[in-house]
Length: 311
Image 1 (tube, rainbow, N blue to C red):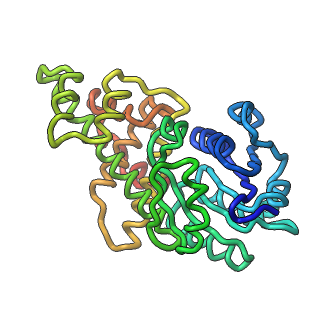
Image 2 (tube, rainbow, N blue to C red; image 1 turned 60 degrees about the vertical axis):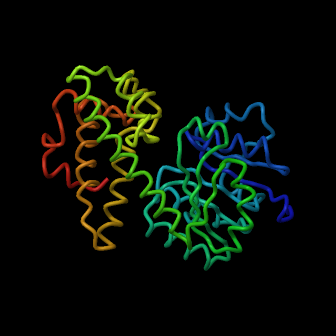
């Protein structure tokens, strides 16, 4: 077993964000990095690194000290951590599991409690920013953990993030991440409306964004989603689609209900993205919501039953 200074790292999930994160871990970490994904093609990104592929979660748990997860959501995290073939099912368990995924707050706290009973420390550490930021190792990471565990994992998180913030105990990383995401999704809808209004009123989108970026209306969404996707109307597949937006907004609305807040703006954004997914942009990059606005589809066309569905 490696020392705390040089733990063997395990990484599960080599998707759009997980692949670049694992790659940075492999390029920067001073000890061994082991990787697992059910898709063999996912390992191509690691071909020129020292990362070593393992064939199962059991193999990973038998060798790794600290395991990072980048998975689609809470059910996958629970299965990988606690399932019959999961990381804690064998004779040896990792010392620490760090979840980089976005899940509900309740799911993070439930998994953390169950892992603690098995002697495994847990932190939720969801990441923010773009795939390009993941490739550069410049993500923002919001961590839910006790201070001792944070001190242990922060140097490892610095391999993939330029900003690493301790937000509180387990679950607090998810609270901050969900709020961050909701603000991005809501801001994207607002920007889409204003870009369409501006263009129809005679101002070219490039001119509008240039001018607004010099004033108090500037934002991360304007400079990134606005310029790179909404202005050229470029919404590729295999990016962050409206279905993922709906999952995250569903988590935010769940948290809002638990805290006694009626989140009207988040509800409206949910209806816009449901319309985006259902009216031709399923699987496409979520700033395609501007197409819904431009074509006059809008959230009002989403039936109440669909708008209220759980995602």
